[in-house]
Length: 110
Image (tube, rainbow, N blue to C red; front, side, top):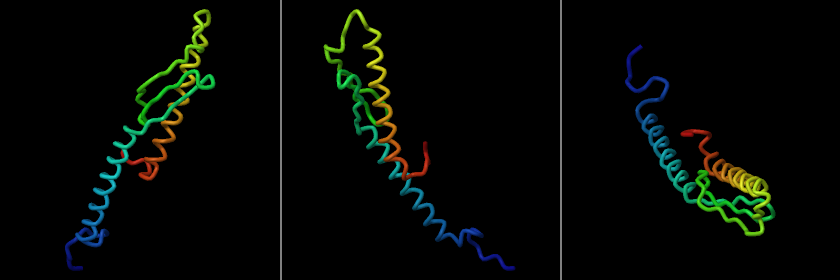
């Protein structure tokens, strides 16, 4: 059998170039999606809106708002629990936004 060049099962250099171009395009799209996630904000709440946490879809907390009605100096444990609940709500929403955006890449680059 004579050697014909190329990459065996890949159908030659032309098909390999197409695969490389597709991989490069997917990488560029993934980088763009990652940048968008850094800008996407979600809001977690608890206590009927007494506590609001704003974070990026990459789970970076940007702001916490505490309604004065949530503050009872005799029951700081309740305030702490509300903050934790708001953070967890925000993390859940950030995770969903992340999965919605990055799910198209099938887990690549995570």
